[in-house]
View 1 (spheres, rainbow, N blue to C red):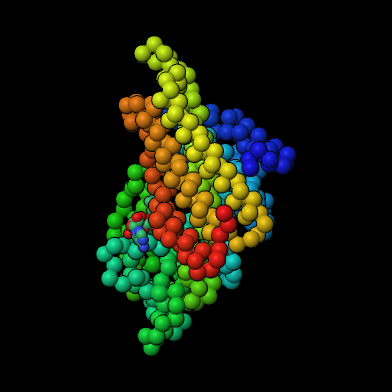
View 2: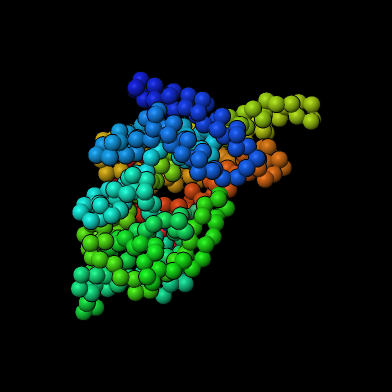
Length: 380
Ligand SMILES: Cc1cc2nc3c(=O)[nH]c(=O)nc-3n(C[C@H](O)[C@H](O)[C@H](O)COP(=O)(O)OP(=O)(O)OC[C@H]3O[C@@H](n4cnc5c(N)ncnc54)[C@H](O)[C@@H]3O)c2cc1C
């Protein structure tokens, strides 16, 4: 439980809150009334984060990092999200993600530049509904010829390369399994079909590949292990999303508490009405349970056990809960909560995507039961 964190982690959480109040809030105040975050401010946050040591928490030791364990990362991510501050996204340094085990040319050409901050990758997994065939690649000598399409590549407009899931065929047409391959965005045959943004403000592209030639050395890991590679880091990402969702709930509860105690035009604060108290009670109960699940799973992650099933349960519960809590937050604030620029209006848009990213809730439910019935996985 968050209550029983070791003293060392409590001290780090205090430092994180100090960093938010003393470094991020003043910078955020200067940005009031504007959208986005200028590059110079992003760099200011990164520099301050390096000095405070948070920047290195997501980076391996061989890159000068000081990687935090799952519990510490969960605690910090929850703290950043509970601040509801647009600058927290720049606090952690780039992590290796799917490239974590890269060696040789892949390390030199992609992982090292990513860790230095010189290159940025995107992730191409989702296929368009209109696809007649999932993206594929054919082996030709020492190359792969990549064809197909990806429909939702976040940051694809500015990324230097995309890690793409493909089905691979040998030269004779026989199947070689799936692979994650690196495709340079500027390579011949790569086309950005459409740029679009989603309601929470993210920028994405759909892209197509037509006979894009890449070296065999651009296969991440082994041929045939594309799907496990693509999903290899997903447990960590689902924990990240869960921590974010719980942090959003915490911010909302604090905001609503003030709102319920504040004067209301009827002459008595809203918090004096029993019906309003019932709604607020549910928001607090749901957040309490979600937060308990989050920290229990983070502690299980510390043991190194297989927690795929528990992480799915946590991600579905925390994100669905955050959706309900923020929705009720808007309801209790009333019309002002929907006015553009109101913090709840922004949060309402942000939380919606969490139930789709890194696995839509119903698909995760299906995977959870598959893990139980076919592999006997999952604690209660
Ligand atoms: C903000 C954002 C960022 C994203 N970034 C990326 C990215 O960088 N790279 C990337 O590859 N993708 C990205 N995605 C795409 C995301 O991974 C997909 O939207 C998500 O996995 C759902 O896939 P889909 O949109 O194809 O929906 P579908 O798979 O078509 O599913 C739509 C709905 O149908 C239902 N459904 C589908 N199949 C089943 C089933 N078997 N059983 C029961 N119900 C089912 C579910 O309700 C599901 O939510 C992003 C999405 C968002 C919103």
